[in-house]
Length: 172
Image (tube, rainbow, N blue to C red; front, top):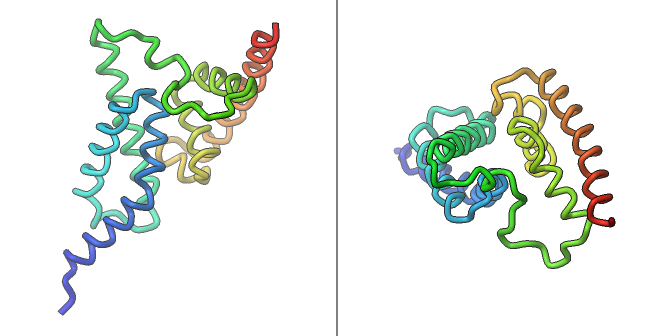
Protein backbone atom coordinates (compact mmCIF):
# COMPACT_ATOMS: atom_id res chain seq x y z
CA UNK A 1 0.00 0.00 0.00
CA UNK A 2 1.25 3.49 -0.90
CA UNK A 3 1.78 5.89 2.00
CA UNK A 4 0.28 9.11 0.55
CA UNK A 5 1.33 11.20 3.56
CA UNK A 6 4.97 10.12 3.19
CA UNK A 7 4.87 10.90 -0.55
CA UNK A 8 3.40 14.34 0.14
CA UNK A 9 6.06 14.98 2.79
CA UNK A 10 8.85 13.97 0.39
CA UNK A 11 7.33 16.10 -2.34
CA UNK A 12 7.17 19.11 -0.02
CA UNK A 13 10.79 18.53 1.03
CA UNK A 14 11.92 18.61 -2.62
CA UNK A 15 9.73 21.65 -3.27
CA UNK A 16 11.10 23.56 -0.28
CA UNK A 17 14.73 22.68 -1.09
CA UNK A 18 14.22 23.80 -4.71
CA UNK A 19 12.51 27.07 -3.77
CA UNK A 20 13.91 28.01 -0.36
CA UNK A 21 16.71 30.18 -1.69
CA UNK A 22 14.51 31.84 -4.30
CA UNK A 23 11.87 32.78 -1.73
CA UNK A 24 14.45 33.96 0.80
CA UNK A 25 16.18 36.19 -1.78
CA UNK A 26 12.84 37.57 -2.94
CA UNK A 27 11.76 38.37 0.63
CA UNK A 28 15.19 39.84 1.45
CA UNK A 29 14.95 42.20 -1.53
CA UNK A 30 11.54 43.30 -0.28
CA UNK A 31 12.25 43.76 3.48
CA UNK A 32 16.02 44.43 3.30
CA UNK A 33 16.82 42.78 6.60
CA UNK A 34 18.29 39.27 6.83
CA UNK A 35 16.68 38.27 10.15
CA UNK A 36 13.23 39.48 9.08
CA UNK A 37 13.62 37.73 5.73
CA UNK A 38 14.51 34.46 7.48
CA UNK A 39 11.46 34.72 9.75
CA UNK A 40 9.10 35.59 6.90
CA UNK A 41 10.49 32.81 4.70
CA UNK A 42 9.91 30.29 7.48
CA UNK A 43 6.34 31.56 7.96
CA UNK A 44 5.72 31.27 4.21
CA UNK A 45 6.86 27.65 4.06
CA UNK A 46 4.85 26.73 7.15
CA UNK A 47 1.72 28.25 5.59
CA UNK A 48 2.33 26.53 2.25
CA UNK A 49 3.01 23.21 3.99
CA UNK A 50 -0.47 23.28 5.53
CA UNK A 51 -2.09 23.58 2.08
CA UNK A 52 0.51 21.74 0.00
CA UNK A 53 -1.48 18.61 -0.77
CA UNK A 54 -4.42 20.65 -2.03
CA UNK A 55 -2.39 22.82 -4.40
CA UNK A 56 -2.10 21.65 -8.00
CA UNK A 57 1.57 20.94 -8.80
CA UNK A 58 1.60 23.45 -11.67
CA UNK A 59 0.24 26.19 -9.36
CA UNK A 60 2.64 25.65 -6.46
CA UNK A 61 5.29 28.20 -7.46
CA UNK A 62 2.71 30.96 -7.95
CA UNK A 63 1.00 30.01 -4.68
CA UNK A 64 4.35 30.10 -2.87
CA UNK A 65 5.25 33.54 -4.18
CA UNK A 66 1.75 34.83 -3.52
CA UNK A 67 2.17 33.72 0.10
CA UNK A 68 5.60 35.41 0.23
CA UNK A 69 4.17 38.59 -1.28
CA UNK A 70 1.29 38.65 1.23
CA UNK A 71 3.65 38.08 4.17
CA UNK A 72 6.02 40.86 3.09
CA UNK A 73 3.12 43.29 2.57
CA UNK A 74 1.71 42.42 6.01
CA UNK A 75 5.17 42.80 7.52
CA UNK A 76 5.64 46.24 5.93
CA UNK A 77 2.20 47.34 7.11
CA UNK A 78 2.85 46.21 10.67
CA UNK A 79 6.23 47.97 10.68
CA UNK A 80 4.67 51.18 9.36
CA UNK A 81 2.29 51.15 12.34
CA UNK A 82 5.23 50.76 14.72
CA UNK A 83 6.58 54.28 15.48
CA UNK A 84 10.08 53.17 16.42
CA UNK A 85 10.73 51.70 12.96
CA UNK A 86 12.08 54.10 10.39
CA UNK A 87 10.42 54.23 6.97
CA UNK A 88 13.89 54.18 5.41
CA UNK A 89 14.11 50.45 6.21
CA UNK A 90 11.88 49.87 3.20
CA UNK A 91 13.35 52.48 0.87
CA UNK A 92 17.12 52.26 1.07
CA UNK A 93 18.93 49.76 -1.15
CA UNK A 94 19.83 46.45 0.47
CA UNK A 95 23.16 46.39 2.26
CA UNK A 96 23.13 42.70 3.19
CA UNK A 97 25.91 40.73 1.48
CA UNK A 98 26.91 43.32 -1.12
CA UNK A 99 28.53 41.92 -4.26
CA UNK A 100 32.31 41.94 -4.29
CA UNK A 101 32.45 44.16 -7.41
CA UNK A 102 29.81 46.72 -6.46
CA UNK A 103 30.27 49.03 -9.41
CA UNK A 104 28.39 52.19 -10.30
CA UNK A 105 25.89 50.38 -12.52
CA UNK A 106 24.86 47.89 -9.81
CA UNK A 107 24.49 50.70 -7.27
CA UNK A 108 22.33 52.66 -9.72
CA UNK A 109 20.10 49.64 -10.39
CA UNK A 110 19.59 48.96 -6.68
CA UNK A 111 18.79 52.61 -6.02
CA UNK A 112 16.40 52.73 -8.98
CA UNK A 113 14.62 49.54 -7.87
CA UNK A 114 14.09 51.02 -4.42
CA UNK A 115 12.23 53.95 -6.01
CA UNK A 116 9.61 51.75 -7.72
CA UNK A 117 6.26 51.28 -6.00
CA UNK A 118 5.63 47.91 -4.34
CA UNK A 119 3.72 46.29 -7.22
CA UNK A 120 6.25 47.45 -9.81
CA UNK A 121 9.18 46.21 -7.70
CA UNK A 122 7.48 42.86 -7.11
CA UNK A 123 6.61 42.43 -10.80
CA UNK A 124 10.19 43.25 -11.89
CA UNK A 125 11.61 40.90 -9.26
CA UNK A 126 9.32 38.02 -10.22
CA UNK A 127 9.89 38.49 -13.96
CA UNK A 128 13.63 39.10 -14.07
CA UNK A 129 14.97 37.49 -10.89
CA UNK A 130 12.52 34.61 -10.49
CA UNK A 131 11.87 34.06 -14.24
CA UNK A 132 8.11 33.81 -13.78
CA UNK A 133 5.65 34.07 -16.65
CA UNK A 134 3.10 36.87 -16.92
CA UNK A 135 0.41 34.38 -15.88
CA UNK A 136 2.31 33.38 -12.75
CA UNK A 137 2.99 37.02 -11.84
CA UNK A 138 -0.70 37.78 -12.39
CA UNK A 139 -1.54 35.03 -9.90
CA UNK A 140 0.84 36.43 -7.31
CA UNK A 141 -0.37 40.01 -7.65
CA UNK A 142 -4.01 39.06 -8.23
CA UNK A 143 -4.22 41.00 -11.50
CA UNK A 144 -4.62 40.03 -15.16
CA UNK A 145 -1.67 39.11 -17.39
CA UNK A 146 -2.44 42.25 -19.45
CA UNK A 147 -2.13 44.34 -16.28
CA UNK A 148 1.22 42.64 -15.57
CA UNK A 149 2.38 43.67 -19.05
CA UNK A 150 1.36 47.30 -18.40
CA UNK A 151 2.95 47.23 -14.96
CA UNK A 152 6.25 45.95 -16.35
CA UNK A 153 6.23 48.48 -19.19
CA UNK A 154 5.76 51.31 -16.66
CA UNK A 155 8.40 49.84 -14.35
CA UNK A 156 10.97 49.50 -17.15
CA UNK A 157 10.37 53.11 -18.23
CA UNK A 158 10.79 54.32 -14.66
CA UNK A 159 13.90 52.20 -14.17
CA UNK A 160 15.45 53.61 -17.33
CA UNK A 161 14.82 57.16 -16.08
CA UNK A 162 15.92 56.41 -12.51
CA UNK A 163 19.08 54.60 -13.58
CA UNK A 164 19.98 57.48 -15.88
CA UNK A 165 19.49 59.92 -12.98
CA UNK A 166 21.41 57.71 -10.54
CA UNK A 167 24.40 57.28 -12.83
CA UNK A 168 24.52 61.05 -13.48
CA UNK A 169 24.37 61.67 -9.71
CA UNK A 170 27.10 59.11 -9.02
CA UNK A 171 29.41 60.46 -11.73
CA UNK A 172 28.98 64.14 -10.81
